[in-house]
Length: 45
Image: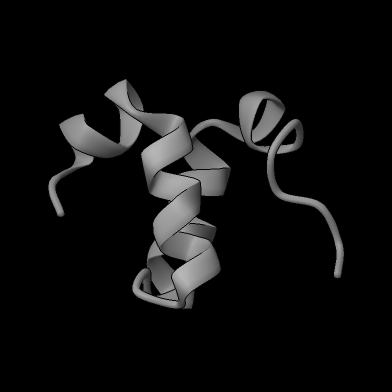
C-alpha cells in the first residue's frame, strides 16, 4: 500500500490495521508523521 492511499483514506488504512495487514513498523512510522491525527484513531488496546 502506498503512502498516498494511507493519507487519503485513513479509515481504510485503519481497517487494514484491524485486519493485521499493516506491518507494525509502518504503523509506527505513519504515526510519527501524523502524530496528532493518528492519536484520534490509534488507541491503546
